[in-house]
Each structure stands twice: as C-alpha cells, then as structure tokens.
Length: 370
Image (tube, rainbow, N blue to C red; front, side, top):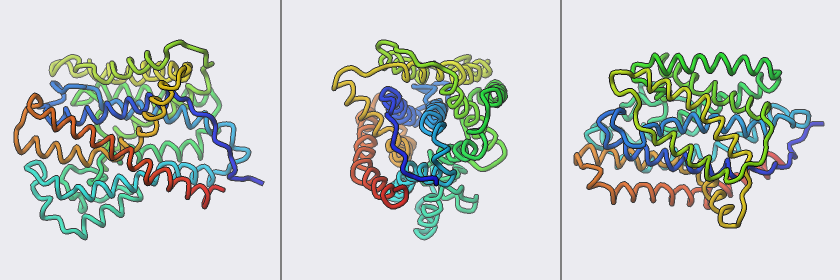
C-alpha cells in the first residue's frame, strides 16, 4: 500500500543559501531595470538569468528528493507535496499584488485607476490557480499572464516541469534523459543567439513567441538539473559557499556583451551560462559543507526567504518603477528609495514566511499528507 508518510531528506544548506543570493539579485536587477534605457545599459545586466538558475536548481533538488521514492509514492502524492510547498506563497503573492495594484498608477500604466475592483479581484482569484488570464483581463497592459504578480509566469512553467517529470521523465534512463537534455540545450542556444534582443528574456505572456521562450528556458535547466543529480558524484570542496556565491553574483552582474551591434554574443553568453556555469555552480554548492553556526544561520535565512521574496517582491517593484517613470529620477538620487524597496521586499518576505507560509504548510501537511 502506498503512503504519503515520507520523511523529509536533509537539505543541501549551500544550495538553499545560493537560492537566496540569486533571489536578492533578482530584486536588485528589477530595481536597476527601472532606471535603464534598455537592456544594453542596465546595471546587474543578467539578473534575468536567475530564473534559469532556479529551474536548474529545482530539477536537481526534485531528483534528489523524489527519484528513489516512487515505490512508496503515487503521482497524486507527488502533486500534493508540490502544491503544499509552492501554492500558499503563490496565493500570497497575488494578494500582495492586489493590495498594491492601485498604488502603481503611473504614466507606465495610466489606466490602472479605471480598472473596477471586481475585475482586479477576479484576476487575483484566477491568479491563485496560476491559470494564465486571457487578454481581456490584462488589467495592466503589459500582456502578462499574471498582471498582479509578473513573476508568477515562472511558477507556471515550474509546474509544467513537475508534471512532465512525474508523468514521464522520472522513468527515463540516463541515456534517454541525456538525449532530452542535449536537444533542449540545442533549442536554448538557438533561441538565445537568434533572439531579436540578444538574450533569453521572456516567457511571461500567452502567445506563440513567449510560450516558445518559456518552454525553452524551462526544458534544459530543469531536466539538466535532474540529469546532473543522476550523473555526478558529489565530493567535498572547501569554501564551496563562497566560491559558488561569487560565481552566481558574477554571472548575474556581468555587463552586456557585444553591445547593440553583435546581439548574438550576449545570447551565446546567456546560453553558455545556463548550460555550463549554472551546473558547475550547483555542483559546487552540493559538494560543500557549512562549518560554523553563523554560516549555517546565513544559509538557512537566505534559503528560507528565497521563494517568498521572489514571489512577493514585484508588487513593490511595480510601485518603484512607476514612480521612477513619473519623476524621471536618476539612480544616484533615488538610492534611498531603492534601498527601501529592497529592504521592504526582504521584510515582507520574512513576515510572510513566518506568519503565513510555514504555518499554512504545516497545517496542509497534517491535513493532506499525513
């Protein structure tokens, strides 16, 4: 008889810490994005690649957590566990997005004040399910599948990756999985070097172009992470958290490559970062050990807030971006407010974690998984 009573495996503490480092880099990337004239001159230029890093890290952790459990776990059990882990903060992200929505009225989104409350609430409720809203419910005007909380698009694809894993890919041999990852890598490189913008940015809208980008960004890193876990032998590497953190910050902060004349060069950087550097960083993180209570506390804190900060911060970014557009303020003058936005994002994420996410997940585990 199959059962839900599966004991949690020990975490990789350094991987938890790296997830937090990348999440904070995402917030900083979006703050600087408000001041950039284009992706060519943006500070923390490649922060968007954190999404691809999250996909690869997720694949690695999914393989570690579930590959050897399928004799004791049904597909339904797996989906329940993933829903309990991810869905509470999806709902909270939409609620925070709804609370902040009318404060985002600006020249960027000049019709926000015209959106009736019932329509905004309808978008929020649909957002709870992560089902993309139709164009008729695009209450912002950016064609986002989740207008109240833009980053919800990546959770939409995260669920697609989980579904494909549970239904099919978990049964793949290493050879079959290697072929899938190789073909996905080729598709990713083609997308990146032929992109009109010279990068892999996109995936947040429901049209053929954006779906192509979203699936291409999901397939290699997510299933590449699973393959990485199944193939590599973990060793012990000293100072792994320092080196892996330094590498992820370096990759995400790298200035634009190739300029506006050679867009393909930046696309090549994007694809090779995802295909080569991100697996290396995850391998380093998985191979390290945390020594000392302070280092353990830092990694735990970063890991704890990583998902909450990612899924809630964009409501404040909308407000900040609209304010920058209205005032035309420079980053050198706006830095107190940009720091405030970053700190607010962290505080709100931590509050959501402790006051809502952890208690909710514990209650759901007792009700659904016990």
